[in-house]
Length: 252
Image (cartoon, rainbow, N blue to C red; front, top):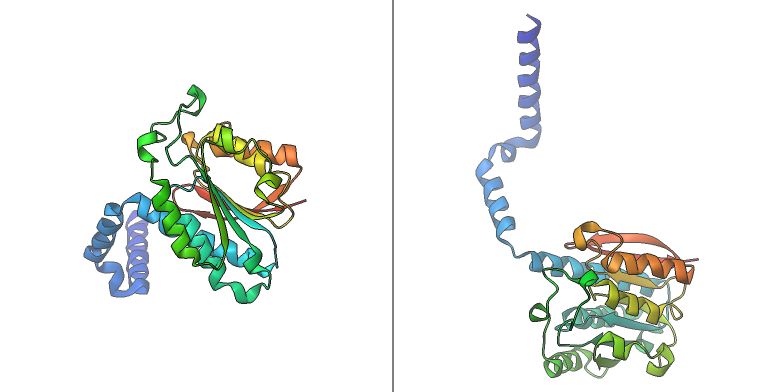
């Protein structure tokens, strides 16, 4: 009797649950269609859409705090994120009287990674996946800026362009830094470059944070942890986005 009673109660719970969800809960074909659409979506599309939302949120938070300084991006690639950040700054000008003072500076070889150490090697991080045309990217950014903001695209491998300090690029304070350089070595150079020019309230967007099978001793994650130790900054995570990106705000 107890087994029959138990089965009866289980069936009753299932019926009640289905009734709460209504007819939608019974339409398996709709769920199958949705599942099929999502499974067919290119992961890069999902990542980029969520990345655009992340940039919008970070620019909004940074703007509300009346931050001043520049936007830096390490790993510009086709310029899509760089241009999106400019658009977000432009649309949020009314919240910060200092908005137009922001300069946009992007660093990239525009030729891929070059020779990687064994420690940095990854099956996806190869030159063929990250080569782009510098002149086309510059033209795209110039059209987006439309003479409203100053920008610079610094072409070259990080070991050549980031050996200078921020002052040599006329960078005094960094509002937002987008680290999209994938490997430990290149991210390390980017963090070393910015560590003396960020301040409490600076926001960092870290793409590919969970690469290398999530190993915190590799990739962007390792470089970020070393940056925290060397700079004395703490951080609060604001959000996760896409296929492994995070955004944080610094404080002391």
